[in-house]
Length: 181
Image 1 (tube, one colour):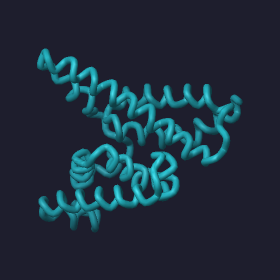
Image 2 (cartoon, one colour):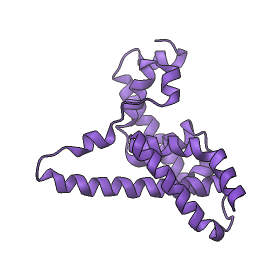
Image 3 (cartoon, rainbow, N blue to C red):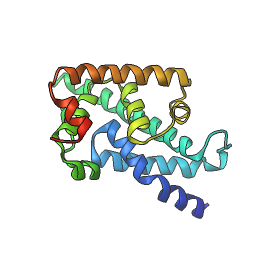
Image 4 (cartoon, rainbow, N blue to C red):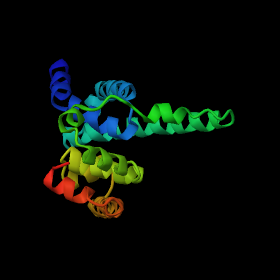
């Protein structure tokens, strides 16, 4: 089991961290949640039936762990609203950029990332899985426990929303196309 675990960790750790980070937007929480994913993997690997690939199985676990965390944060924030404490702002923001952001350092890409936050959670998940993690429609559908049709529809709607926001910021779309700033 140790060899299998080490292989899964080596192959997927970075990608799972990025996926979870895009959902929770907090580096420390993402690191903790990735550890939770691997704890669940250790506890459940014996029952893994191979009906999907290990990759989609891991992403599915990561998705559920992140959603559970988001729900817990939402409940916590509702309790604190009575006291007018805006804990969600500190939970959802992380000033430390990802390695890709350090390399790119293009404001236009940061604008696009900011716009992506305006999409629904479902749309964000599809965008991250399809375009950042480069997963197929089929893999994305398996991870999200959706039909391929729902993935395509959600992807289409997310792109439509992003295009609407791009249209509101003249010049940004061209910058993203040529990679200039």
